[in-house]
Each structure stands twice: as structure tokens, then as C-alpha cells.
Length: 463
Ligand code: SF4
Image (cartoon, rainbow, N blue to C red; front, side, top):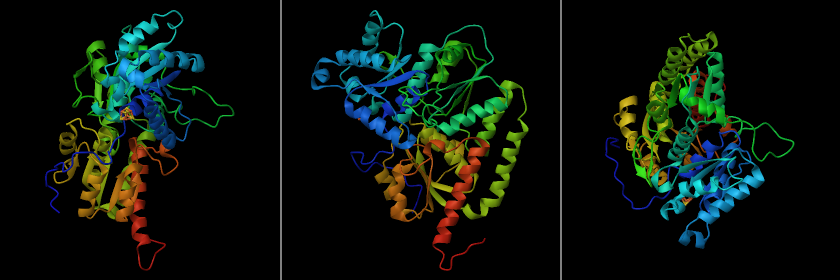
């Protein structure tokens, strides 16, 4: 098949979108803030969908409130429902912050949530709680856009200028709790004070409890978020963020921007915009940024991890060189993964995302040198399957939603990212840095070896 063929959309409706809905991403980001309860302003179904996805990936109880739109609210506005929901959340959860995400429905009818919240906040008894609003209609973006929108709302609301501090702000992205714990471990090893936003490394991967906790411990505190405005520097992971189709777009008077841009433009915090540190090249960029900010060298344990990764590449390269893969997921995650796959000699022939930033293909071509791959923005699994059937794929790298394609084609699948619904441990998958890359590399090489071994007519126990 000629893989240079231009992608055309041969259908009018999405059949199985390669993305999830925007309030899911914003609710996950809000779960990374200490004392925060997410609330979805819309119908029950929206919050049920979000809870179901988060629970089955993270294997944790995930409380997400709903303003429970009715037919009346749809016609006359959801202000009464929202205020009632806030009352209920406050009395039951006693949160420090309520993170409100608006849905397709509440945005379509034009609920003026800012005014409703202002009115609610000014009512006696309601001043002690902070209310943060992320505008997240799903027709405007994917779960990744929702995530970044919530992080930007948090920075906008809580960052304060003040006397400079020596903290480095890490603006994570849609990463696993294991990735977030790894980032914290790296900062400690580099002896660099930091603020990580959002930090759901504990709240979405709890130790076993004897008693249920309405709000799990952990998360970025309000005081830490205030310090971001006078931080020494920030590192923002990702290149697409809210900078694509949504960049600067004014929606009901609200301008869509990425969190790092707010720190840079409004607080003059110097920033590093780097890809997810997956693969040696991308991890080097991350550690170079840390070395620049801290004026310190890499601690020996991290330098050794890099050395082991190079050694692993040398050992495993011959098993995977030239294999053809399909890779998909969130835009920034896939850009980094594609770079990693090309780095290890795998040919990513189908590269897909559900995001529609309009920056995806350009970044893929620029950063990874993949000229002949099919690159799909706004991807649909059915369309990806059609391409996959025509190209002789060896491997799929992505989340559980694409499993049925691997099953149909009888090829191995390496589960990465979110959501991982059909395995345990999705929350403990480590993707980042030299260590995460090494784990990913071993998993990919072993998946290819197992496929060969399982299909060998003689079988073998030694290689
Ligand atoms: S796509 Fe819109 S209506 Fe559907 S669950 Fe998401 S927010 Fe709700």
C-alpha cells in the first residue's frame, strides 16, 4: 500500500472516536488538587461516563458530582441546579475547592457559569470554598484539551506574584500516577524544590484504606499554586496543549490559553516547553532543562539509568528493527511515543490521535522524521482499522480502546497511556525518563519476541 496517500474523511459521522470527552480530562486534573471535589455541570450521564472511565483505569473510587440537568434546566438554564449541587457537595464533602467542568449541554444553552459562581460565592456561608471553572464542551476538544483547560483555570485563579522563590513548576500532562511519582523522585534527586500541577500521584493511586475517604489525601495545595506566580522557572510538557485549534479562541468571553503561557506572559516566569520525556532524545531535553535551571549535573543514579537504556537498545534492537507499528492516543503523548519508536528502529506506519489541534501532523513530521506514515488527526478507530487491514502491521502501541484491532489482526499490542481498561496496573505504567523508556522498550521487544515464539512451528526456550 502507498502510505503517502493523503488522508480523506470518507464518512460523515464518527463511529468510534480515538478520544474521550473533555470533562473527563478536566475532572482528572481537578483530582490532582488537594481537597478538591470535581463537579460536572450537565446531565447525569456525563458524570457517569467520566466516573466509569476513570474508575476502570485507575481502579480507585472516583467521586465526581453532577448538577444533574433536567428538561427544565435545559430550557430555562442550569443555575438553580448548579447552586443546589454546590450546596450538596459542600455539605457532604467539605472540600477546599470545587472544580466545575461545563459540558456540551450547559455550554450549548449558554449558562453563564462565571456569573452564577460569583453570585453563589457572595452568598454568606459560601466564601470559604474556592470555585474553579473549566469550560469543557466536548465538541470543542478532547479529554486532553479538557485537562489543559482545567490546569490553565487553576493557574489563572491561584497563581500570585510575589517575592521570587526557588521553585520549578512542572506542568504535567495526561500522565500516569507512576509518571508523576517519577517526576517527583527526579526533582528530589536533583535537589530542586518544585511544584507539580496537577498531582494525582496519590489521589488516583491510593494505598488500601480501612475506611472510605470522601476526598483522598494528596494533590497540589492552594499555597503551592500561589507560589507558581513567583517561581524560578516552569517546565511545560507537551507541544500541542491548548495551542492548536483552540489557541486564543474566545468562548463566552473566555480566552483559551495554556497554563505555561499564563505563567510566562502574566507573571514573567521563564519557561521550558519540552515534549513528554519518552525516549532518549526527549528525556535528554528534560534533564538538560533541569541542569540549566539548577546549575547541577545529573546525579549518578540517573546517569546510570541512561547508560542502561543505551545498553538495552543495543541488546534488543535486532528483534524490533523495521517492524511496522500503529500508535495512537493523546496528541502530545503520541508525538513523544512516535519519536521513541523511530529512535528504536520501529516504523510507525499509522500515527493517530482523536485530538484536532491542527498541529499534530506538522509536529510529527518535524520531530520524528516520519515522511511516509499515515497521520490521522480527529482519528476514528474504524478508519484506523481499515488502514491497519491494508498495511501488514507487526504491532500496536496504544490504549485499550484499540484492542479489537490487534485481536482481529492477530498481532501483539503494548498497552500504554489512558485508558487501560482490560488489564490491571494502568495507573502504575511508567512511561517517562530513561527508566520509563527502558520499561517500555523491554515490553515492546518482549511482545514481538513472544509473537514469534508463539507462532514458531518448533517452539524454543532459548535465544
Ligand atoms: S460528549 Fe458532551 S454530552 Fe457526551 S458525556 Fe461528554 S460532555 Fe457529556
